[in-house]
Length: 209
Ligand code: PRP
Ligand code: URA
Image (tube, rainbow, N blue to C red; front, side):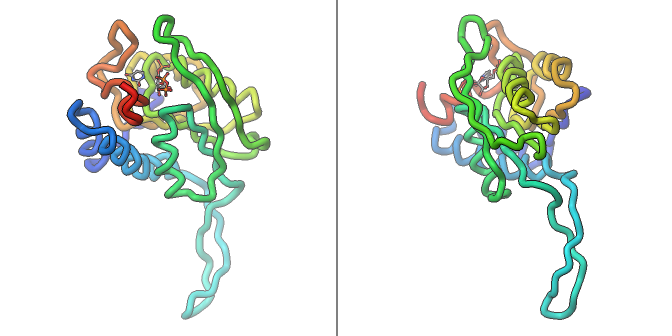
């Protein structure tokens, strides 16, 4: 499907299978999400620009690449986004963090915003939005709308699972924002849940149901 990169590395797929299993514990689910986020972070940052820096090894001077430009921003869509955020920060500890507080109204499936905090110079940074689930895409679209409103121009969206309907809708709303995911599943059910999916990511992560 155009507009989404599926990270089909065997380690990602193996961990995702365990996460989907309804018998996996809250503790196991959280640990796997953290592990998978490291692998997904590796893919979503693959094309970051680098610049050569002069350093001295114990043997000689050399030109060696380092990340160019300002620090990245990871924008976590609360609350489930925090499950991806933790592992990403393990890999890029210098990243700045934005929090976008949204929940999906269970009746209307529309996002309700309750919090927003982000670095001020979003226009100068790559912003990687993280949320495990892209279902109807209403939440992801609202989060990106908000970040763009606050100046972000260079964004990517990283999730664990996506529905084909959500990918299509997000691509239409934000064609400039590439999606990275571990899987595009079959469809959405009548309640807007991804099928086969993994259930409610926030509840499985925090044991709230
Ligand atoms: C989940 C998920 C996404 C959203 C996806 O969050 O983490 O943010 O649903 O659904 P959508 O694509 O149809 O908008 P939820 O609203 O359950 O909030 P939570 O993270 O606080 O549990
Ligand atoms: N939010 C989730 O946590 N899971 C879904 O399948 C859809 C939305």
